[in-house]
Image (tube, rainbow, N blue to C red; front, top):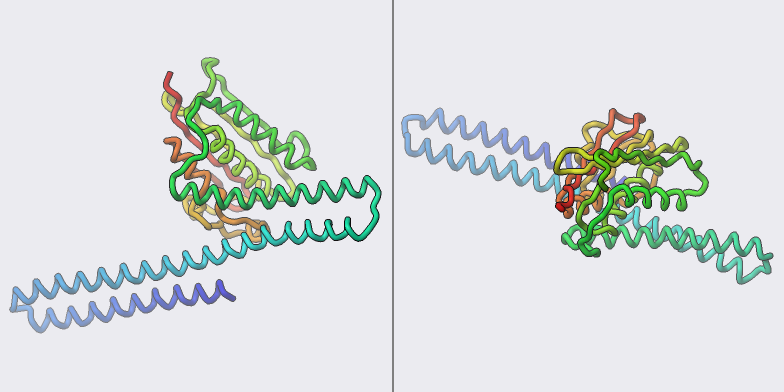
Amino acid sequence: MRLRGHRKSVAFFITLGACLVGLAVTLNVSWILLNWRKVALLVLGIIFFSAIIAGLVLNTIFLVREIRRNEQHDAFINAVSHELKTPVASIRLYLETLKRHKLDAAKRREFYDIMLADTDRLFHTVEQVLRAGEAAHRRSRGEVELIDLRETARACLDLARTRYPNLPSDSFRLTTTDGDGARALVRGSADDLRVALTNLIDNAVKYSGDAVGVTLSVAPFNEKQFEVRVTDKGAGIPRGELKRIFRRFYRAPGRLVAQVKGTGLGLFIVRAIVKRHGGEVTAESEGEGRGSTFIIRLPRAEA
């Protein structure tokens, strides 16, 4: 209901702006036809008319952007509330069960594992929100150091295998191109780069449905940059959304995307981290249901 209301508001302001621009054009053309002999008044009229039209257009654009921003903000609040409330409710339920009933050791261990998983989920949500705040202010937690991208990618895949133990081991693959045999060294924060790659891997898993297949590749791109690719065979991204998905709170439309809960901060954090390291991140996809590839290019560390 709220989304429908936002769309009606956007349509209203666009229609209102178009009507006002049309009315202004009509009045100005009529005035020019009546006063075409008065050159000075004609020039002033055209200048003021252009200013009025520009003001109307800018005002309409501003209002539409604010409405869409509020819509994304509401979606973010709802998503974060769900991501926080669900694990808290689960932990409380299991704690009450442990308190009221005498359970055997195996059952208690099972409950402890579930509560630890819910705690990890809570920690991840809070970490994402904090990281987004740091990204917005261009702050970094880590110190600048030499980082081997291949080792970082391998560590992130090992972490993914630990976080998703139910997936087959071949769901995650790493391919590397050694080139001249030298390490793929960049400068920056190892913690931040691990966060960026982990976010991309988590997205690839979440939006792959039942058939999860994530491939990381690390290779030289040119004499000045290394390239990291994260490829999946999942939901894919519509071509018109490839640039928008890196905005804060933004989530691309799609049937599978609507079923997966998220805050809309993961890719925003990835882009902020990559930019802070002097690199760039882009996305490629042939369309919905055809998988996607995220490409990170970072400058090589100078010897």
